[in-house]
Length: 134
Length: 134
DNA sequence: ATTTTTATTTAAAATCATTCTAATCTACTT
DNA sequence: AAGTAGATTAGAATGATTTTAAATAAAAAT
Image (cartoon, rainbow over all chains, first blue to last red; front, side, top):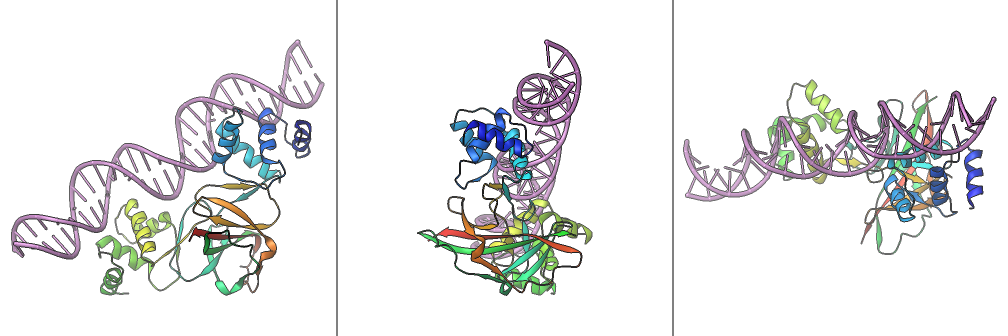
């Protein structure tokens, strides 16, 4: 993607094409699927000789997410939960009051998974069904 | 569960039955499914007039988990990930190198979910398939 | 029972990811 | 070119969790 195409992309999403946003967008939207954290992106930025603050990386990742350019992958809120139900099962996560409700394992069927990478083994499957008011 | 049954339970799992562990175990293992965080458990402890430190609550939750008495519900590591793939899909999480791999939405079928609580709406479904070496 | 050993608890400090603040700077408008 | 609204930044603040190092309690040995 050229610099001018990146500029257009940002404008189309209501974001001013600043030097920092252009730099991050061209790293992120190169056509390949990418999974980044703020830290991993900071490394890439550093490696390409660009200088910008970590706060800007966080701001920009959230703005891109709000604009629909990125998707946030987040577990259940930002704290660790412990469950007295040790059997395999899943959860509704009610985001309006931050409560969890059990979903029996039998409610979820997983089929045709892509091949597990060589040397790796499936250790567990966690399904989170997010609920909101409405 | 009586205090002596709680003591037995702890011993059976190789844990010394200390005052603090007995108190936490009797709150947690009352036969009802429970989802707790360290903070929520601290509140319950406080409400029952018991005094013990937050560090002990964290230690104990992890020890109970290691002993198989609790299950930890955790998203993908403890950082927020952002994904350039904004279509509905899921993830392998390779815990050995902390990498993510996409799983197409079509690989996962969800059926017979429990009824969504009144006034709530499903906002998204996130499936994490955890991988380890071996 | 008393001592000794080893595990546990604790308060306080440290850590780590993330957000906030308030000052500076930059893109867009006039 | 000047003004204004929005963006960036360094550094402080926050919040969850872990670590540290000293004090305490449980189990084992005498």
